[in-house]
Length: 55
Image (cartoon, rainbow, N blue to C red; front, side, top):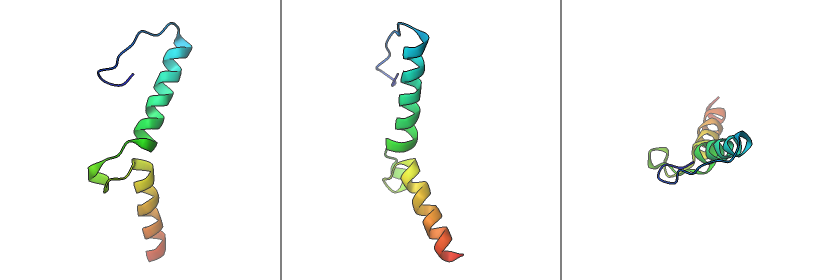
């Protein structure tokens, strides 16, 4: 599923599982330099916690 690691899936369920795994990785585990070295979900939590302290 990851770029450069394409594979053939035997059925639709296998493909759906691979897509779900990739979405989880993309949103929760992938580290982004633009987001201060955090995963998107971690960065969102950080920004929201700071916003709540200001309010």
